[in-house]
Amino acid sequence: MDFFAWMETMQRRTESYLDRLLPSANIAPQRLHQAMRYATLGGGKRVRPLLCYAGGELASADLSRLDNPAAAVELIHAYSLVHDDLPCMDDDVLRRGKPTCHVEFGEATALLTGDALQSLAFQLLAEYPLEADATRQLDMLRLLAQASGSRGMAGGQAIDLDAVGQPLSLTELEFMHIHKTGALIRAAVLLGAQCGKPLSAPELAGLDHYAKTAGLLFQVVDDILDSEADTATLGKTAGKDAAQHKPTYVSLLGLAQAKEKAAELRATANAALAPFGEAAQRLGELTDFIVDRHF
Image (spheres, rainbow, N blue to C red):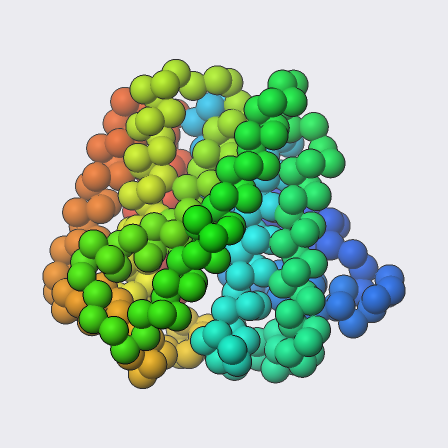
């Protein structure tokens, strides 16, 4: 199966699984469940689930074991988008080509939607057997919690809010995005791998290096797209970071150097995968997709 066929298959698998997993809009509280489905289904590239499936493939994990962690990381991502779009955060009105959750359902329901999606993600990792060793499954829960909390995504968002209008060094910018964007991407790869055969310490270190690099790469490309693509292509408001005076790789380095940075990170990520050989094929293809995507 070529990469794009594999990607489409995994995206459909993720969508179908999330559709079955999310509570029906007919179940009370109906409006909250409707909003949860609105915020999660029918949009997005599903990059994080794809990375989870690819990480699992590297470790020879059974595909059925990967569905729950793949769904969990996407639920965390969906919750973060709902909260990021709120007026008290980025105050955006468009996400994935449609009105943001708070525009469609109101701020209070949007806040609860994010809370409920986050809780459901952890329920998934706790409720279903993913590993014969319960200690490894607890490690997976801890990994997702750390990636989502103050030392991960939530902390990165806090740093981002404090950085508006402030000059940041490249080191400071990378620190912010290692937390805001990179932590959940790293978790997606490692959660997938933990569903398969145990990896040696050097293998885990190499995979971790790949995952951290891929997380930064995703953000660099996101900043480039925000400066080059239009709103219709992105499915969200283009140029908003510049309008709000947020520090980005493009604002700090310039567009040409930001593209050079992306090329360097791509090479570093691919080098980290080299020892795994063909087992890392999908992860390598996803690295290329992250760079070459247009939305």
